[in-house]
Amino acid sequence: WGYETQHALMWTKILFLWIVYIGSLILWFVYAVYQLRTFQDSNYNNKTMRDFVLMADGLPEISGDRNVEEELKSKVEALYGTTLVGVSVAWDYQEHEEQILKSLTDDIVAADPGPEPFAPPEMTGMRKWMYDKEVELLGLPDPAAEGITSDPELDEDPIEKVLRALRTAPRAFFVFETQEAMEETLGKAGDGFDFEDSRVQLMETEGEPDTTYWVNFGHASALQKALKVTAGFGIILLACAFWAVVFYSPYAYYVMTFNYDNGREPGMIVATSFSMIVVVGNAIMYEVCARISDWVGFRFKDNREACYMILYTIACLFNVALDFVTTYLTAEMMLEGMGFRNYHGVPIEEVTEFTEKFETYGMQRILAENTYLYAFPSTFLIPFLIEPAPTLVAPMAVGHLIIRSHTEAQGLQAEEFMAMIPMELGRYADILLNIILGILIFYFPGGYTWILFLAMAGSHVWIYVFDQYKVLRQIPTCVFASYDVEWWAQALMAPIIGVVVSCLVFKSNCEGDNYCIHGPELIIACTLGWLAHTIAHVMVLIVVIPMFSKSPPEKDPNAGMTFEALSSTVPCSWFTSNPVHCLRSKHHYKHSPPCMYYKPGKANVLRRNKAIGCFYDGSSDKK
Image (cartoon, rainbow, N blue to C red; front, side, top):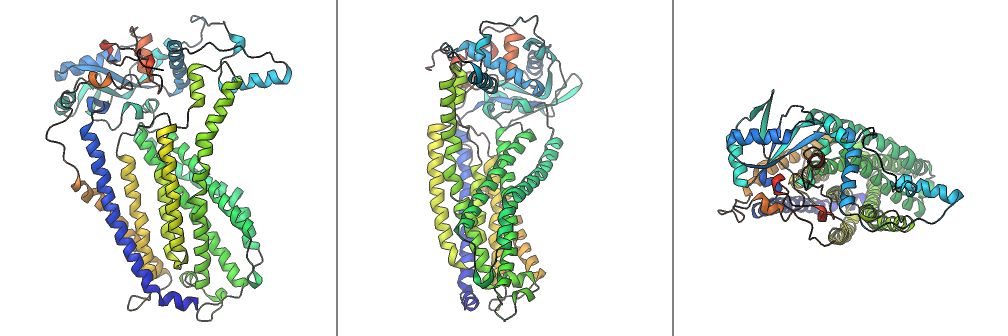
């Protein structure tokens, strides 16, 4: 009955798939054009830091004891007849990152010290030992060392020595007084200029100061990054194997050795365990992909976020594939244990072709149920219900306990303990994974389809509400400068919507006057349908979508705006965001006041010094 009913109503499923496919394409196209034009509209109507800067590439290695910034500034001004605000040079300081950041933190604390810490209570024995270990682990100032100061002449590696030993990275940022001056210089620069024995190219940059990872400019060439991304896929496979062996294999062993005779099935505890195994698998991939993206060494935050989104989507698909293979093998054992036969009366164990076995009604029902359970609540809902705990509640609660127990944590350090986890764009990957699982249900009978999509809609309402609250009320800052992440999200929709085409090919097989193929031929046909759509979709994204770009306004609403005007209202600039530049301002050039390092929430320590391109004055900021 099930087989006959499924095939009698298959025309409705095929019609539904055509509606979904065409509707998805139209909605994707509209959304892609809307996002592009929205980004362009914001870009045309707002001047930001990158509108005043050109990035130089190809600098030679230069010692930190030279006035590199002044040399480069004089060179460009003489060559192109322009006036620069200043030059912010990227340095190779990864090996000294901890010491450099500590020196910057000390400068901020000295400028905004906060209240005097209370003396900790008297402690002895085990309590004293545990307290000291906490102080060491958390990096808190040691109360026992109060009043002890270091002698710069006796320090093994004072910050001045570190700065002199540094070498420049191949890149630097030339900051102009106006965007018009920047564009004029870019036009004159052509193929660049010679500096010492190197050819230096000038180009526009894709990032903003607050999305720049300065520590990565001295490392990770394009080839090195490509090799690290490739190695990252190997790490993802190892992580997937770890999840499979430690978490998934006990579940798989149980369900595969369960006695399915007489139609027996595992109980609710097994289904609940499966949901948590899926949640753990996604969490492992989340952490692994985040660490790989950091390890690759991207110079701009948006590139890192795009890499993370792609890796996380692919990694979770590994988990899905592993589960589907296991479920298929389990279903095969279950159906054989039940003595199941296909529509033609052939026992399931005697069916040799994968496609024929996959199309049996019993197999379809079992795989449909597993897809539904994998998607909801395991992927659609549970991770997002849990998310507020580790990202919002736990940091606040732990920070509160630390500050209450350790009175030596004051000022900037106390604020950092209470800060929420920064915002990142992993939500793109979460939504893409949900869409993939929603589409996979189309391969199976339609009983779960509408339930699954209602569950997806409800879950996404919760995701939207939570993200709205987190962004507006909790996270310390959120800056994304380029269109990269959005573009790659649009590109990933190509293979995802292509799965609908693959499903159409599969479901249309042997229906009415359509083609009728079996075995490997059917698998190849489904794959070719998916591949053809993916290629066409990506070409539309590359060629057609840009045709709907928004034209720049005839009159720039911010024409004539100067870097000084912008920088006087925006504390994070190409100078204040560069750690080494700030330390060189103080220790090498002896500027007074020096260029202070910008940290979110601490703009009040910045001081105006027009001569060095620092125009923001935080002395009047309210704390």
